[in-house]
Image (cartoon, rainbow, N blue to C red):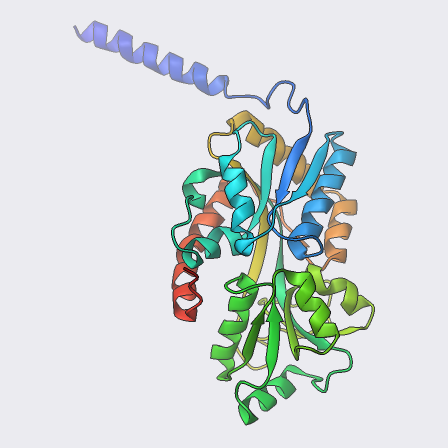
Length: 327
């Protein structure tokens, strides 16, 4: 009997070793048709810019055909929903980020998906702070000017964001709380409409991802006042952080990563992660991402999954405290 148990144990160990040795290699023949990269926001915003950059560069470097497909609406949750419903084959992936994956589920009532269960993390791409900016013709020259005006006349200083409950809107809400001021939030349907109204002077301030605003900052039409990250943006080294402007510890950034439907084969995830990380290591891709005001950062799929879960828990309280719930 003891000998039999030993034999079964030895067999189990052998099978386990064999299974480990035969861990799935990257999917044979993958991809053999175009890959759709779902972009859950309108053209022109930070998510769209980075998504098209990834699609274009992957097509060039890996010789894959990757096509960006905008599916905007409801703070990016419509595009995520489409990815969740797609077949888990690796031919439908999505550019997710903090807005639609860790804020949207707490913002919108009864979403039919859970990002921590219905999606598979593939590869982190980049992160970016929020930039607080104003028209070049604005009377506000510094963040201190904005705070002084808001304290003198609460609620009269307006700021535009890509939408109610986005991480950018909530960055504005957290800034109001930190500075002890009351601003008036004007939500738009995407980054580009908010940007256009800020340039026209229809709103006093713009809260935006750096990639969405970088073109107009470089042209001199938009004046950046501060960034919300813990350290300065490498693309705007002369622009102070909110923390440096008198609010120690203030740090709000957003991240972008590629996800696939739950159940996507590990071999496909491995292949996608390897190619995207290889791309992020090239000087050409680093320069292209930096040019958009974002910071490239490669991760394993497991690291991205851990980031998603940690932020998913953290931002529940922030959304609830903001009162930005959408039924």
